[in-house]
Image (cartoon, rainbow, N blue to C red):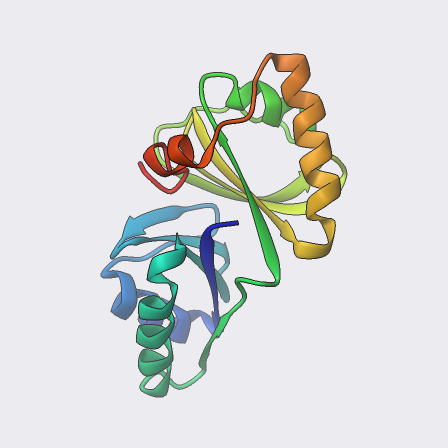
Length: 178
């Protein structure tokens, strides 16, 4: 994927301080915040993922490593190669996610009044899901599982009538855009 991924961990107070320093905001589990050129996604009170465009990864990584030096109890690691990201864009995004997940209420049927971040199973595989809006989503899974998840997204998408888009469209419609 063309996304940088940083993992921030620590006790809840240290992590809240670190995320505040880097983003100027705060995220609670289930929340996602767009700030300082990245999406800040709370996996738990002690684990946050920061997602950014690939070109911003080094800047964000350097800022995180610098901030960690001044935040006892917190760590930061570049996990870009460890996780694959699959972007879904368009009005049928909720249909595809609903087909792939077993959440209650089904994804797409829950109210999307603000961005959300979920830890769940997609196509029976462990995954994380950033939903900036009802028509945009980024599914994250371990890099070794990406091909299987991609095949399942493609299958569910075919049933929902979606198609692939090229890099020009992806750049213009970046799943990280709001």
